[in-house]
Length: 243
Image 1 (cartoon, rainbow, N blue to C red):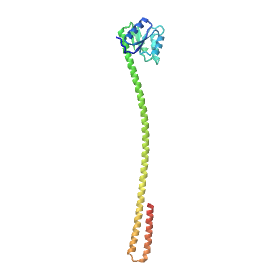
Image 2 (spheres, one colour):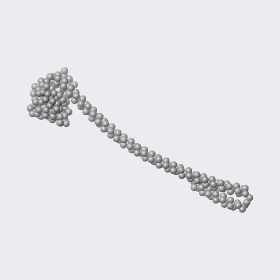
Image 3 (tube, rainbow, N blue to C red):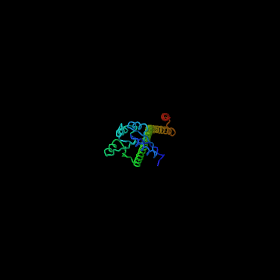
Image 4 (cartoon, one colour):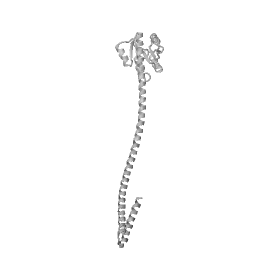
C-alpha cells in the first residue's frame, strides 16, 4: 500500500527505460520520491544535485560502468555517504564481491522482485537514517564537550586567580603576625625594664624619705635630699620614655 508519509528519495540509474520505469513505479507506490538517470555521467551530476537518500545502480551502463560510478561517488565528499545498491543481471560471486569492494551496501539480482527490492530499500534507508542521526548526535556531543571544556578552562583560570589572591592574603597575614609578635616581644622587654627602673627609684625615694622623717642627724639631710631628687629625676625620665 502507498505510504504518503515517506519522504526519502531514491536515484535509479539504469539505461533500460522499461526497467527504470518499473522500479520507479514500485517505489512511488510506497511513497518514495524518485529520480532516473540513464547513464553514468548523468547519474554523477544528479547525485550531487539532488543528494538522494539511496542510489539503485545498474552495472552495465553505456558510458561508465556501475563499478566506476560507485567508486567516484564514494570519493566525493558530497555523495560518499549515500548508500548504493547494485541492480544487475551479472550475479556471479565475482561481480558481487567487486560491487562490495567499490563501496556498495547491497546487491540485487535482475530480474527484480518487488518485495525483495522494497525490503532492501527500506532496510538501507533505515540504516542510513539511523547513521545520520548518530552522526548528528556525535556532532552535538562534540560541540557540547567543547563548550563544557571551554567553560572548565575559564573556571580553572578563575580558581587559579582566587588561589593566588588567597596565597597573597595569607602571606600578608603571616607578615603582619610576625610584626605583631616582634612588636609584642619588644614591648614586653621595654615594660619589664621600665618596671625595674621605676621600682628601684621608688624604693630609693621611699627609703631616704623615711630616714629624713625618723633621723636626728641634720647633717645628713642634704645628702638624703640630693638622693631623693636624683631618684625622682630618674623616675620622671622613665615615665617620659613610656609616654
